[in-house]
Length: 328
Image (cartoon, rainbow, N blue to C red; front, side):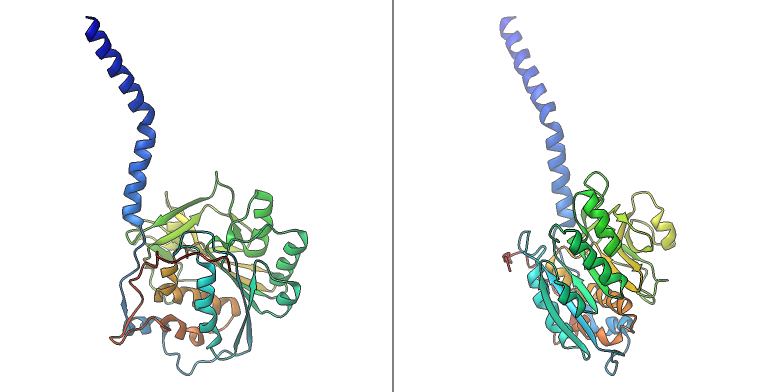
């Protein structure tokens, strides 16, 4: 009886320990499963001929005006191959400079007033520093006065909520707080639907697929129009219906108008390899064209630049996860 009592006590302790650890074990298992589904994996290469159906002819296309771009980057803050703000800047700045009528300057952290004054459009891919009253005023005045912004991924995150509200006044959307806004990786089994009635995405497929990350349930200012969202089994729905679906991950792409200025934003763009994906480049360049109120055709060479092989296939299969972060 005494031996049996000791065994029962041991079993009871083990049972208590199991249930104490069960939530953590379950979470770990779910995380492992999710990582297997959404771990870094670029899209397959795409035939150039198929992409040309989306870009159209652009050999003779030119912008109607001179465009001054300011690219804003910051210190890399993630593992290599993720949030490579400097590396992505070094990839895109030369490509943009190669387009006729475009000049590009660079800023780090946050622009000066002189840099804002000299720019037509700001492209930002970084985690913005904490901004003060003067900087928020500079940013908002730049947009309302006719400046354009392309805001990528973590550039919409700022805390606390009062700072987020001020950032949303400048770019339309921002992080609403950890209890409200959500983030997650997504895989090729989770389609990203586009509002093809919007001029930025008109003529593109109803949905595209990436393996990347997005945020949703963001804080939104007036005049924000969500034009990209993640949803499952929504092929038969209109984009408006998708935005009302249970479980939709909205805010993948948005546009915003403030005064005379335009903003094109996205919460995607986590992995570095995504910037080597021709479809992702196409979406960014279509957004830039909308911000500039220009035909995007002159920007289309960037869809293919440096990622087209001798067999006419475009893209990359390199996950780029071996990269190292750099402070600048």
